[in-house]
Image 1 (cartoon, rainbow, N blue to C red):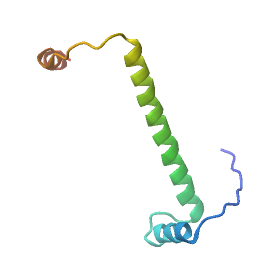
Image 2: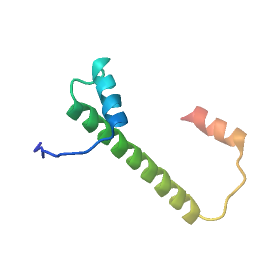
Image 3: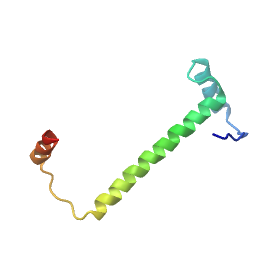
Image 4: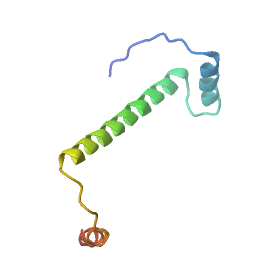
Length: 79
């Protein structure tokens, strides 16, 4: 995977937070910390998009129907 070098500006508070993460051994350097934060944000966005897609699919599926708890449990037991 290709990498791109970036220069970023952080507040003193943000820099201190990253340094603490490194000091406690969570990360070995600033770049590792920032890459992990970006990866987690990407995963979070993917999760949100999946929820949005499911909601849209549900809205398009028609009017809501009453939920039958017993029928649901029975179908789950059958596998």
